[in-house]
Length: 355
Image (cartoon, rainbow, N blue to C red):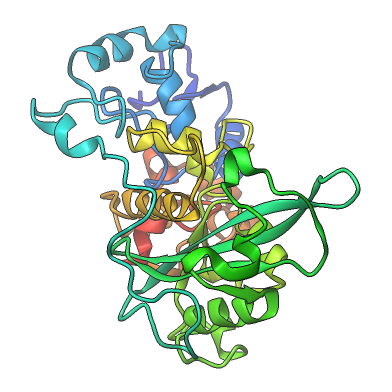
């Protein structure tokens, strides 16, 4: 009998280890689950998990241990790293895995405020965007952008400015933003712009000399946009950017909760980088750096580039119907679970493919 079937004839998924009475049920599971080598995996038993949060529960790193994973949790507790979730790491690993909090304001600023067209950012392939909002409206609950920061892959500021809101500010949220009325009048030494001028500068940096319509193609010089909750920031600036160039840590499936809800940037930074942010007055530079570091950590994962949807930039293009077409049902049911896993494609594009 196949190694993936037990004595009762049950068929076990080669990725998540779920068992099914009939092979047709396993095929349907593979069609909907979209397992792939790009999923987080347990370094002890090899089980695939839908997100790092699910893997943390499996390993007991998140404070809870799944009953069936007690042996994995015990092995992880003795040799594992609670940040990168590797099951066996050398003694000196923690020093390099746990990153340190950066100062609120970087000393490696390239450009401050003002400035002209598409320059800045050097040869950076990705830029991180961070915005701080103040409150408008009668109760101060309407978010309007008051400060913008753009950081490159080397954590250097390429653009920073205060933004003069188009409507009156009713709540400066000073306890968290540190923004005072005078900052939006004279810039506080950083500079102040209108929303339109700041949005144009951010767009020029991102397009990198490319025409906006050409940025929507796959062959473009436009830069990747990294951030947390990018839709909110772009909406505040009145910008639109192609989805295939966005790298949003709030919407990346492996970093989301098991229910596919977003985690906060503060939680992700503490959990996956090892240090805390957003205490006291919050500078957008710190958010940009945290998002960029999370992106770099996810991008640096060592995943197979072939099989399981790992074949280049078209990794997420194939649908489940293409991987497991209905007309091949009988052929699929004769395959082993391992062969089915090799056919499966992810339902998202893994950031490791950005290399």
